[in-house]
Amino acid sequence: MFKKVLFVALLQTAAMATAWAQETTRFKEIEKAFLSPDSKIVMIASHRGTHNEFPENSMAAFRKGIELGIDIIELDVRHTKDDSLVVMHDGSVDRTTNGKGKVSDLTFEEVRRLRLKFNGQLTDQQVPTLEEALNLAKGKILVDLDIKTNKIAEIMKVVDRTQTVGNTMFFLGRPVYAKMVKEKNPSIRTLVRTHKAADIDSLFAITKTEAIHIDPSHNTLEVTSKIKKNGGRVWINALGVIDKRAAAGDLEAYGELLMNGANMVQTDYPALLMKYLQSKNRYYLGKKKGRI
Image: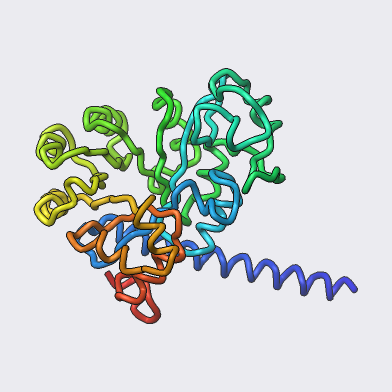
């Protein structure tokens, strides 16, 4: 009996070691692609985790994103009344949990007692802490931190404590904020928001960033070429019309979004986008996996 238990334990250990090695190898591919703006690989960012299958911004949604083998999970960071950093999109807990009130008016214990909803039904999922999400992602996947709090210094401390600086991107609304973050820690990677083509030149005059979020209004070859020339990846959202077209069967909607050179896409349907990109040899595919 003892030998049987030992054998099972050894098999489980071997399986865990294999899974860890595969995840580590995958993350090396992700990081290589991320730091290669001219790569043909289009990177996939899953909006609020895989929220079409699990509660948004939940640990289950983040785990599924890792299992899918995508590049990035996007999550939202807020602080509680007692300054704990938690993952929550809305300013209140009303829509996504069985509770009521603003996140910033509730203590961490009060938030932690809540349960997340999925399709209107309560689940066993809790509101994650930022630290839990980063520990899960560590060495496996990139994390886009959509920062909805002024506690940036505290976020930096969590990233430092979890040793996940290589896993994270700080999504910041203005280039001056990216400059401030990088001055404190040059290793931190940033994603900066722009609203028009003229923002690109002024951004690079202020700071260097690893990725720039563009809108359809300035999704042009001139803009994307300028961003890549300055060492950045080009982020664009498929959320809304593009994703809806793809979900209805028109995967070429993603092709229209990418035709001017954007190479990071945030989507509500990561598996569909992966299917499209693989069909166009724009993702990690078969024996060509990892070749960028």
